[in-house]
Length: 277
Image 1: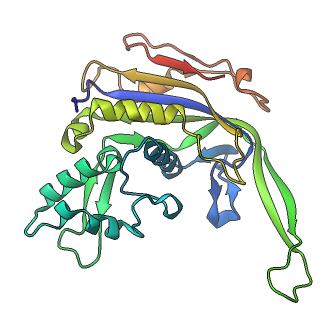
Image 2: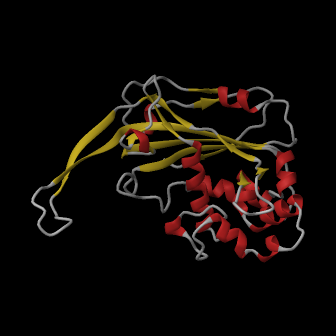
Image 3: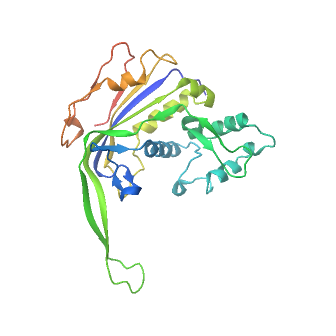
């Protein structure tokens, strides 16, 4: 495994068509929308999709969903207990963290808080080098709601159909931003090979991610920008890189090409640009 070559910034523009990209469970599973009407996807949602793609690539994950568990463990503590190296006698926290980072790619990528009950190495965290912003749509979104019914009886003797509501975004383009910190990567062991896996996961973020709320093909990575700097701390900060994007405001976009997205910033390394539409 080779050391990370330099700081990384990345940006994805993803489209959503007749799908719910990230429902709010405390608001009837409505698509997340801010006070100004712009759609949102939480960083937790995006990290979950990245983890799933890494798992598809054959990588070992610490934070797995129950339906995708590949090691028979039912909880994070079960997974930690199953790792023999982590259960050595008199193991200190630094050693514990190094072993966890070596064992699971998502720990050395995103970090992890270890807070298991009745564990001497509980109550500390590993800070990961990869940070993800919550995604925001380029324009205000239109939320469409549809009434649905269930006509099959759950129990013998039921007489009524059950009513419900399903929500979706008609069409929107969301901007996802993130970066990789070299200093933190050196601490967790996040390597250049791990960065290459992250890049591939982002390119195919919505593969194997379909559901009733996100039918196959309803979410797509349209364009991706990837900057790998030559320095650990480049002279151009991430905030300037992300502010350098320009595009027209579209009230009711119907396709990705409705936006004329451009990027230009003097003094900054040119990004790799991947177009998928």
